[in-house]
Image 1 (cartoon, rainbow, N blue to C red):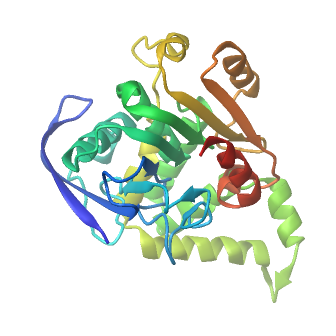
Image 2: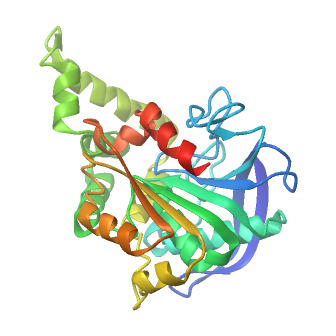
Length: 315
């Protein structure tokens, strides 16, 4: 069931003030206060519905699963303006909102429902970036940080692709559909696409193009144009190392465990795996895991056997 929190008098990172923000969320598993709490931050096209029959992460979060709802309370917020069930735009220029703003909103939301500390924060892609931002804000309130298929800042490559998506969304006649087609080719790899479709045709239409059209239509049904513009823009704002923030010092001093999970074929977040291995070597609380897959960025939503084997070590 979708629940609502009202946030009043919120100041954005750019110092602009928002008088009222509605923050929607769901709770799964044990009641708040009865079990360790896991916060799940959703990806760009995700939402708070992480478990149950239509839950997008039900292969990970459910009764008897790795994140076992018999043992944990799972909380998931909707990023304001993501259009899940309720049209809830922030009434701002979408380029005024950052992942740091969302991280602050989520902490305020947790405080409103009487949650002061978390057993874990876990999130993939955009949700993983927001998880990094939340950990930097209040590291002492978290035991485990689990960012998946993401990075602690948006690289030039990510920012450039966010910019192309923004151009499509502002200039195309079918903006959400065309932007989604472009994005799907970032979320997968040439090897994955070629292996799946093998130049197959249905009549005169290549099956791969039919597949892209299907995903474009699906997202058009799910997102308003304004919502997709905002969610896309947020991806390029991930950056915990701005304003002189020292990540190595943070890793040395923070008591939380960090379990970073990356994908070897990820074309969107092409992280420096050598850097991650160095971080693991030099920081006892930092652990790095790799999902080996031909499927690229979306592998964290496809390679459940590998993902669950990694998460089993963490949960």
